[in-house]
Amino acid sequence: MGEATIKQQIDKLVEGIHNKDLDALKRIYATDVVSFDVEPPLQHVGVEAKLKNWTRVFTFFQEVSYEVRDLTLIVDEHLAIGHCFGRLSGTLRNGTSTDGMWVRGTFCFRKIDGSWLIVHDQASVPFDMATGRGVTDLEP
Image 1 (cartoon, helix red, strand yellow):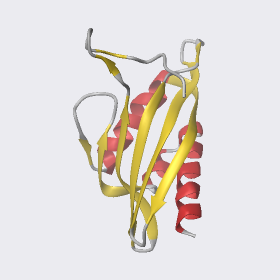
Image 2 (cartoon, rainbow, N blue to C red):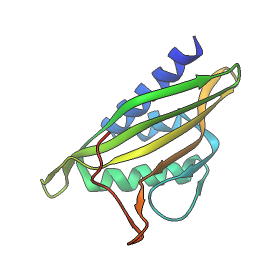
Image 3 (cartoon, rainbow, N blue to C red):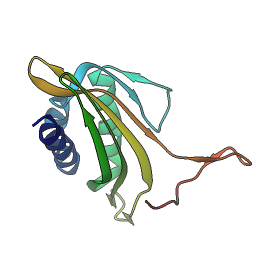
């Protein structure tokens, strides 16, 4: 039952992003979430900081979607960990369509007052050791 509930939370995350619904997204994160996102700084602490990240994303996109592939979950009584590949894509404000890039995503959920909430997430891209630059053209 826990795994199905976690998958529902991931589905709500995807739907919240597609609808640009900050209130729906806020209900998925713990108030003290720590996020290691692809943009600086190294960490974003608290749900308001996480929502600011999504607000920045939503200002770039006229229409936005998020795709999750190869989600793998390990669920215990009070803690769940998942990893997947994720891709943000859509139509930018200037009308340009973009397929986005695939990132590696990790989610840590904790059962808080009966609800599974994201307490930590991380999005990352591999980097080329010779150049020090992120590699953003890989496909899962």
